Amino acid sequence: EEGRILVTQNGTPVDIRTAQGPIRLQLRPPTTADEPIRFILDVHLGKLARRLRLLGFDTLYRNDYDDPEIVAIAVAEGRTVLTRDTGIIKRRAVTRGYLVQSTDPQEQLREVLDYYQLHNQHQPFHRCLACNGILTAVDKTAILDQLEPKTIRYYDSFFQCANCGKIYWQGSHYERMQEFVAGLDAESKT
Image 1: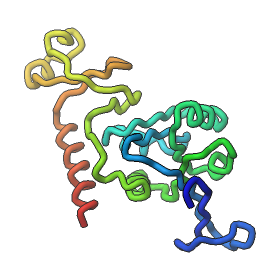
Image 2: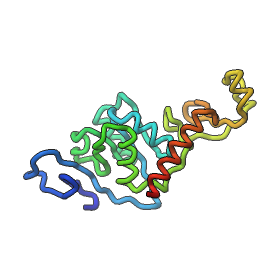
Image 3: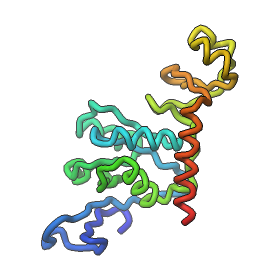
Image 4: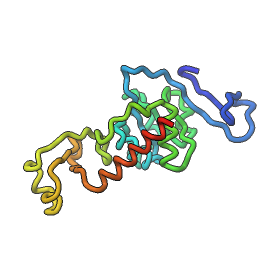
């Protein structure tokens, strides 16, 4: 069903005109290894956006995007729309998209990683969780005035978002994030 809407009910393709009960709509676009997937998410998927960014996926999200703006950005930038809103997926201009089924952010992430077969394509800690910008290593001396005294004392390796300037370091939160990523990797091997 390349480039077409796939309608399923309990995992089986069905005709949308005759289906009764809950159905699942999916756009099945072609993807190539040369073209990394880039997402734009609707207002319902903020926690999923942070998780995708944590894994290094190019993920646009703002809680004030309206549907026409999401569609326009997706078309202009060749982004895949992730949504919980069937109205966005049904728009003719949307050629790449996925209707996320789960309401649980962790399940949503599994759903997207499984559907797009992205388990081995992530680059953790590569993007800013706040704005999606690229993180680059920064010398500690260049940002001393932006750090708390204990952070200066205990940490030496820092990264800064090239877009918003947010600073990251490998504190206790980093260890939890590493465990999160390791858990996803372990799941994908089972």
